[in-house]
Length: 110
Image: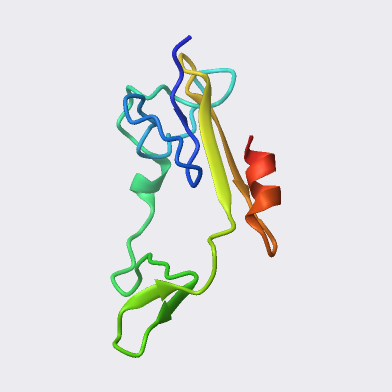
């Protein structure tokens, strides 16, 4: 099977393969409890939206004296996600924390 794969943080991205862009809504229609990617509904569609909140992140960020942003140290985390069963929409996601070095996270992601 041709499954979607991306190994972010390692410079090994495969742009010609596509991952789903949103979570899929739980359903009783399949043994794994998930609907296929063809369904555009997501479980987040029914959640109330808070107008005072947002999502953002600024990890490992420093600023030089001139105000230019830069990284404080090497980014240590690595992540993976790939397709286990495209027909049933089963994917595996993993995040590996380097804890003082990227070596362990890199090894685990391999």
